[in-house]
Structures are given as C-alpha cells and as structure tokens.
Length: 484
Image (cartoon, rainbow, N blue to C red; front, side, top):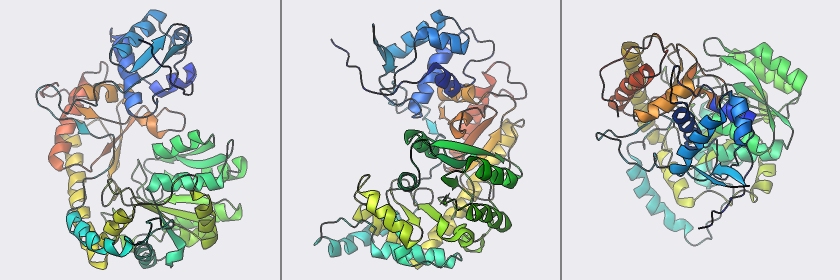
C-alpha cells in the first residue's frame, strides 16, 4: 500500500524543541514515551497540524540533547498510534491525531475532563430563543440569506449594549462575523501583511498567535505581570522602537491571566497608540463575565479613549455558547467598509438562523439569564480555588474578578510535563507554552472554570495525582485517587 505524503510546512528542529518545552519527566527512564506523548499533545492542541513535516532524526536529537536511538523509538510509538507516518527518502510527517481523542471514556469509566478549552456549556434558556428564532426566520426565507454585515436586528442590539456601557454606537458601526477568531483574522488581513510587526501581550490568546504566524506577521510581546498587570512603560517603548502596524489587546479579564486594565491605564495606553497613529484590535470576548458587579458599571470600553483607531471584537462563545459561532466587530464606518470589501476572500457572512437565536437572547429581558450565569461562574471559580487550596497548596494564583480561568504558577517548570501526565489521568490541559510568543512559560498553567463545580473538583484531584507522578515536583502532595 502506498502512503501518500501530504503537502505541509516543515517544522525546524529548533522550533519543535521550543514547542515541546520541558517534555521529559525528571528521573524518567521512559524518554521515548515522554517525547512521544509530548508530540501527540501538541498535535491534539493544533500546534503541529496534520501534514507538518518533521525534522530529520539527527537534527532533532542534536537540538534536544538526546540520542538518535531515543528519537527513533519515539517515532516508532507515534507511527504505531497513527500520529506520524514515514517513508524512506521522504522523512516523517504528522499523519493523524492518534486514538486518545476518539476514546469517549478512559479506563475505569472515568470520563475525560477537558480543561484545554475555556468555554462554557450552553446558557440555560437557549431553546426558548431557538423557538423564537424559528418564528422570525420566515421573514428571511424569501431572500437569498446572504447578509454580509449581519442582521439589522442583531446589529441594533449590539449597538445598544455598547451605548449602555458608555460607548455611543449606531448599528452601522457594527458588523457580525463567524466568531471572535474570524473577527481577528479579518482585522489582521486588513491591517498587516507578511513581515509586519504586531504588538501583543505576553501571555496572550493562543489562537491570535497562530493567526499571526499563519499570516507571517511578527508578534512583538510586552510582558504582562500576573499581579501588577500591564507594563505601560514597556508598551510605550515597544511602540516607539518596533513601530508595530497594530496592537492586539485583551483588557477585560485577559486570557489567560484574568486581569483587567483600569480606566486610567486604558487612557494612558490609548494615548500612546493615538500619538503614534497605531490601530488596535481590542478583544472583549469576556467583558460580560464580571463577578464584581454589573458589566455596565465597569471601565468604559477601550474605544472610548482611542476612538477611530480601535476595532473592538466581541463573541457569543464565552457568554452564551461556543456552538453559536458568532462574533462581531465594532469600529468606525470607514474601517468597517474596508473590512467588508475584503471579506469575500474569507467568508460570505454568518448564518441567519444563528443570528436570530443570538438576537433573541440579547433582548432587553435576556440579560437576566446572563446575570444568573455570572452567579454560577462565580461559584465555579470559588469551587476551583477551594480545591486547589486543599490539594495543591504550593500552586499560586490571583483570583480574578471576571473571565473564565485561573492562571496558576507551578512550583517548578513542569507545565508541558504536567499536561502530558494529566492526559493519562483523564484531564486535557493547554500547557503554558501555548500562551507565549516564543513558547516558555513552563511555570504556568491555565485552569478554566467553565465546567460544573463537581467536575472541577474531580479535575483538581486528578491533577494532583498527575503532578505527584512527575518525579521532582516538590511541594505537590500525593493523594489517594484512582489513576486512570
């Protein structure tokens, strides 16, 4: 049987070594198994897409500082699991995602707990909105269904929400897109090209970094302190020295740190960007998840300080449901006209029915359901914090006042090894390296709290066992939990 070699980019040995991070367990004699598990983790996480060509064994062995025999044994394991395929003279490449994700349950009946995604279950009451959307759909069936900028009713409700938050907005200043990621890609396509620099926070949202790499843009990171927050002097220096084409910021319950930039900080950053005529894409996907008060009482949107230089991105995924693949962009009519003119190269607009569902959920009385959701998430956050205090006392973190995740500092650089070990205990994690421009962040792990409290407590128990199984993880206590 002939093995087809898929077309794909080649990952260098240096790049792969950076992605893998601290992949080897301290004292482990199962180096090949550890390396294979780390590679599979990054395949499942999307960092090594199917078709990616792997470096030569000799190059990778040199870069990782291990024997070529160990590399060969790890590739043998990956080939057996269907993750890697090889052909003599053509090398090896990523061929599939293996079998772990296809298994609905782990040994012993323990279901997999997915903490790799900071996404909640559907908002209660969604079926009522679906029924309302079915009634409203008939008005659109006489047309072709292509409404490039989004349904007028949804744009009106989005504009009303911005206005209520202190940013006067009209419907023609809003367009609806297929999720926040699609919104960022549209903005990136308009604002920057190959080789252009883009200012980003460090750490930041991994998919934005992936989009920048795919566009061959150069991210310029500015460190974000998990306690004190944004380095305003660092942002000013980066803008002055790197002259980025635009900036990408998450100033409301930042992903992954959960931090929020105060109004005076927004004003200062906006001044820096305005003076240098640097546009900025501000991701507000988490702004409605405010556990300290009503979202309407929070700091004014960043665009209130930076004006027409700002494109504000929002999403239904973090508040309503990830299955509603809808997002939106708020900006000046001039910028939105430019976005719409180039949109045909990416998509032809969002689904009409999904927009009707979201419009029904964003009706004036629909925000009561969001208030109940915030109450529930606050309880889930506290349950996760309580479990960590009981089982992982050496992990440190700031309890966020909003958002969907804790950004935890580990007792030693072990994030990638913990993610690998956690998969064997039934928990999927995104290692800290996913949130860094150049990898690293091995002392950090993101723990979302969008799942029910009982699942979060169970996940922490499993993580404790996973951490204890990593040799040399002092300060992480072992507990008597089933190993699955």
